[in-house]
Amino acid sequence: MFKKFTTADKLLFVAALLSLIFSEVLYFYEEKADAIFIGLWVPSILAFGIYLKLINNTNNKND
Image 1 (cartoon, one colour):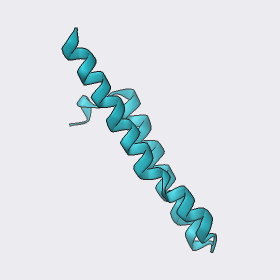
Image 2 (tube, helix red, strand yellow; image 1 turned 90 degrees about the vertical axis):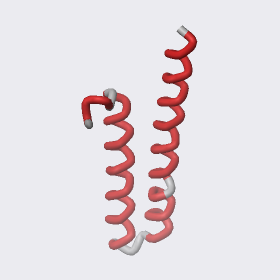
Image 3 (cartoon, helix red, strand yellow; image 1 turned 180 degrees about the vertical axis):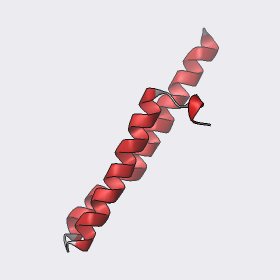
Image 4 (cartoon, helix red, strand yellow; image 1 turned 180 degrees about the horizontal axis):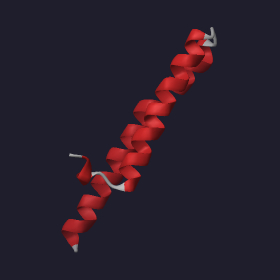
């Protein structure tokens, strides 16, 4: 399953995971506003990864 992931896919997944963990840590240290702000990065990072994947797939089909 992981053989299909490129290096960029793995890096984006790690970035999203670290963002989620950091957000939770901030939340438990009573920095709720900062935690929510950092937590909003997770879907943005994953959406950016999907966008890159779609762009890559459409470029490969046109070649």
